[in-house]
Every structure is written in C-alpha cells, then in structure tokens.
Length: 482
Image (tube, rainbow, N blue to C red; front, side):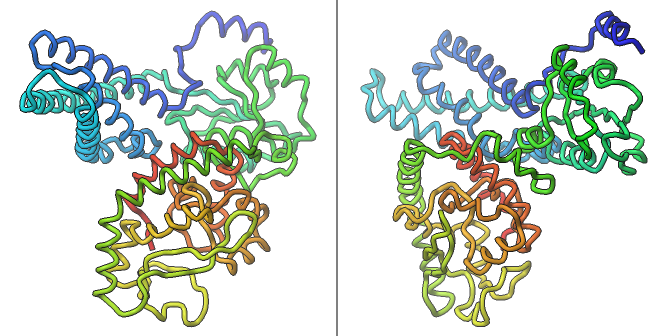
C-alpha cells in the first residue's frame, strides 16, 4: 500500500489517546498522588470548618508516609499490579506503618513547637486526624485502582511496539516484556524480512503474535500505530538504515534492542550482550563527589539502622547462645571493590562444623541450619553485623552482594563480565537482591549479574535510596531465603 494513503488513513481515524511514554507503575503512582491530594484537601477544608483539624502540619504527615510505604512495599511493581487482590491484603500493614511514621513525625514537631492548646487536646486532635487520614487514604487508594483499571480497559495504557526482526532475539524480547516489562499491556507487532534472519517458529506458531512482512518499516509503523520502534534483528547486515531514518523523520521513536531492554526491564541482557554497545553507552562512571556522597549515605544509614535494630540484635545473640555452643559471630572471607578480600561478619546460623569439608552453597531445607538460624535468616537479622563492615568502609549499604573468593574465581572463568560487578563495594542489599530470588547455582549467578551490572552502570545516590526503600518489602515478605 502507498505510504501516503496509509498516512491519510491514519490521520482520518485518530487512535485512542495513550500514555505510552509512562510505565504502568508511574501512572498508578500519579493517580494515587492525585487522589490522596484531592481527598486530603477536602478533609482539611471540612475539618477546619468543623474544628477537627487544628494543626494542618500534623495532618499532612499521614498521606506522604502512606505513599512512601506503598512504593517501598512494591505496590507499583508489575506483579503487584497484576495480582491486585493478593496485594491489597497487605494494605492494613501499610496503613498501620503509616500511622506509626506519622505519629513519630508529629511527636518530633510537638517537641520543638509550643502549641497554644493543652496537651490532651493536641493528642485528641491527632487521634481524630489519624483516623480521618487513614480512612481517606484507603478510599483514595481504592479510587485510584478503579481509575487505573478503567484506563487499562479503555486502552489508554496500551503501548504499541513495532519490533524489526522476528527471530530468536525478538522472541526473547517478547518473553521479557510479558514477564518483566514496565507496561501491563503491550501490543507487539513483528516485522519479518528474510534478510534480517529466519522467522522464529515460536513466533510463527503463536496465534497471539502478529507478524507482518512484505512492507517497509514506515508502512509497518503506520499500520501498527507504533508508539516506538525496536530494532531487534538476528542479522543486522540486511538492515536498511535509510528506511529507519525515514521513520525517525516521520516522528516514530527508534531504539536499539539492548538499550530498550535495559530501560524496560532494568537489567542488562547478558544473553545478547554486545561489547560495542556496552562500550559506547552511558554509565560505569564514578567521580569523587559520587563516592563521597555514597560514603556519607552509608555512614548515616548504617548508624541509624544499627541504633534501631540494637534490641533485636541483642535478643538474637542471646538466642544463639542459649541454643548451641560455639561462637556468636560467623566470620568469612568475601570479595569487595577491586577484588579486595575482607572478613564479613554475620550471626552464626549453622552448626559450628557446617563447612568442615570446604565451601558449600546453601541449599533448600539445608540441615546445617539451626532452628534459631532459620528464623534469623528469614528475618535478615543475621545480616545486621555487616553494618560494622560498612562503618569500617569494607562494604557499602547498597551494592552487589559479596561472594566468596572460591566462587568468584569460578564465576570469572565461565561468566563474561562477572568481575565488573567489583567496580563498587559489596553491599548489604542490592538491586539483584530485591529483584531476583535467592539462588545457588551458576545460572543464578549469571541472572543476578544482569541486575548487578545494571546497578553499576546506572549508579546514583537516588538509585541507592530507591533500593533501600524497596529492601523493606524483601525484609517483611522474604522469599527463597536459605
């Protein structure tokens, strides 16, 4: 078909407006913010008029605390948005934690402010404010999700992708989009051309997949109403760059496969990794200011967490001592930045003779773990002594988890780029830890490396803060702990 005719048809029947440039999680978060702001304003106006809200500064602490906790608990992740019923069961915990945070904030404000009201009146007002704020938040969250699913059904959040190529690389892309993608609803069209590689039989036999051929890239983009074109052929030597340039001039964003995967699933695709892309893309740069800010972040967060967790740490030490003889602390050599070895500190969770035969990976239902040790691992309390490693400068709060030298040598020999994870200090928590379940195999190490490389490549203090927040979800709902 003539491209001019296609363009005329495309303009004659404009598509449904779409928010294709935003991930589903960002859209839902934005709706939550607007809903909470709306109900908060209504509550403040009604409360002020009726004399219930005497201190707006106190009332305003509740909604931000709840929104922050929704993010920390993973309510905007793909799996949470897909299984809303299961996720909403956790809302009471979020609301309860939001009350605690807001009340603590109010106590701080109360301690430095001379209220004109008697103290019993202040506490009475705060109780009313807490009840109003939390009820309003639950209503706002429910409204947000109704609006969100309405937008999904109307196609406003549908993203139309045109993938150039229909081979194995294209199939991998489809698999990642449907399992890890930032959008819940992607409509993907594949453009097949024999010069770009063979058609993958899995795409050919899948009735849900639309593969077109015999048209130019611009025609295919117009036919599919593409929001973005992803270049993902198995064979790039047959690519017509002039036709791609015509698409770009027509207003269609074009992105290369590896860059799209990195942005979409927030990890590096090691299976299709190309050193040229890694070399010329942004990232892997750390200046002096970055390192100084990270060190300040480590010291501040570690000292705070150590102070808050001290009672739990003391109870864990007592439980280990009462359960079995042997040392309380477990010391082990691990590898940190630039491949430097250091002695990591953990609470002992196994029998004293657990590794008499040498280094062994933990496995499911490991009989070397004690009863107390199993509880400590599930709650992550056994990791708390590593805060001392952080204060000493051997580790960072956020970074790739440290491995033992024996395993590092093994992985370096069989996994390309494994040593690049040591560009930064090892961490107590990390991007791989909040996105990938516990693993104890070479394949697991390779999968976790894809997240570690993404972190190293895209390091920032803000990214560290995001990981720190989402670690709360892993601590409260541990999975795959061994």
